[in-house]
Length: 390
Image 1 (cartoon, rainbow, N blue to C red):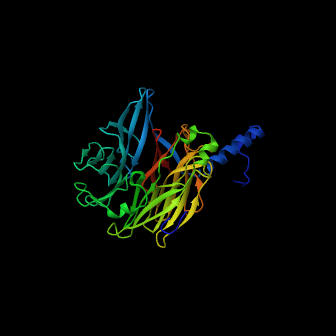
Image 2: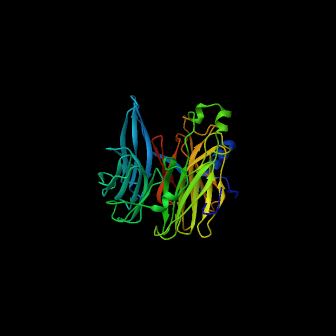
Image 3: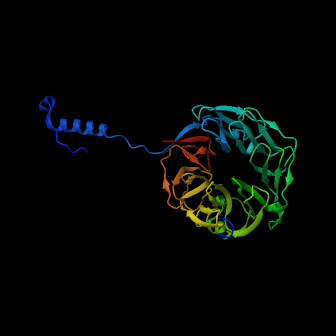
């Protein structure tokens, strides 16, 4: 991947009176138990399920997820009934995920962005919605951004949106009006096949990433013979827009990749994580890169043949990285059968340790959200929400 732009006690005891009347073997067992109880338990971080969609006649797909503070959380997506009909749904919590309320939506959301615990934006297929009530009610903006997939706001007025057909927009009035970002159109390739799919900022540093992938013949890789699928692995163009001035100026770049840059996460200390995902039959399902914004270099941080990572998150002071995904089985990474949820953590973005996760958690995709590294949640596309437990 191109790196030009980013990328015991053993103390002896005198026998007690009671011990004189207890068989030696039993006394030893009692002593062992007492010794065990006297040793304080070692706490270990792990992930517990807080919410699980349990309807027998429908399934829930979570598309996006936000926890702007320790108490307020919002998940959005849709349910699919037995007649294969979709129904928009939002999940809301005010108590850190102890209880969740289900709210029927008007349109299925694609993504969300929140400032604080109340103000947020939601992107749907037909436009952008806003809320000032932590997701309980939403108002649709009059300006329609055709093809928008994601938004990011610095404050209540200034923000960016990115989407299909080489489109990136900027607003300085809270979304009442949007202006196309001219530099976005400089990416090579047909606009029809070029998508900006992710936005990440921290301070003045920001990255908008995307890809250009022309269509190919055939069905999904998991439906095709191994050799046929492998033969279709061809590189395509990854596109990047970078700013160090809070969006006042941008630098565009592109490189040839086999995978797609689908996620970036930036921290206040000029470090970041970038995620590249690959098709079936490739050497690895995904690769995570450590980004050094101070010098523009990136280095491979994590990859494993049986771990398909779908989201990355970096926290500062001190640095901590979290990556989440699922366990793969064989060369078919995008199987219709979900894999076991897997979460890894690192304090140096080089060495990763797998964390204990509730064995019931499965996913095709996992999303990480939380205000800091001690208050973090993960949502799966299979309708589960897990919390990091200290």
